Length: 249
Picture 1 (cartoon, one colour):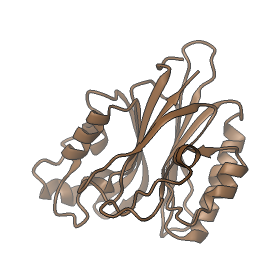
Picture 2 (spheres, rainbow, N blue to C red):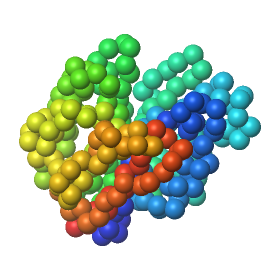
Picture 3 (cartoon, helix red, strand yellow):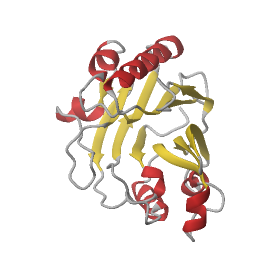
Picture 4 (cartoon, rainbow, N blue to C red):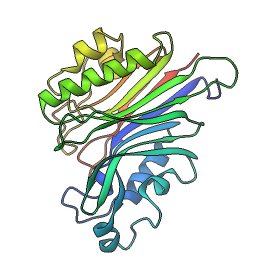
């Protein structure tokens, strides 16, 4: 395929690039962290598409967009998928990639008008006739009932769109501390979660200062994980980022 045998990915809920109290703009520090990890593909949640109030408040707010600011230099292929609009702008999910992305689409999985959620889908295509690597970046709802509907939507999308023999990575903020995804994703779709498979437990990532809940996940099938880590960060988000490396044949 067009990428190396080793593929490094990161998933990170960046809390719109501002501190928890919205008093500090921390996107430059987030960019520096991502550069230090140097992943091939980045799955991001709560990326700000536009925020008119913050752009006036912070002198170092990006002139173009948060996505382009983060993607600059390392990830020439990047896409933003708007999930929620508000009076000052919008935010959503994003993919940053060192490799070309095909068939990009944003699937609305909102279960109510009060909670807008989406799945950002793309695929990394092989140079020749090899099978593609499918990518899904997602951010699920806070309520158990809405997550159940969103898991079902994800299940249906994968079953209808992605052949079982083709490689797949799903990463993001699942808000799934009650393990509702276990039946729908791991058992029904033959997906495995990197940390649960390699270490026997799901990684605790929230809240970042004292991680107690396992809400961020990296699911996969059709590829082999070789390494994984929770990235220790303080003050960059209310979530900790996750890193995983895979062997791609």
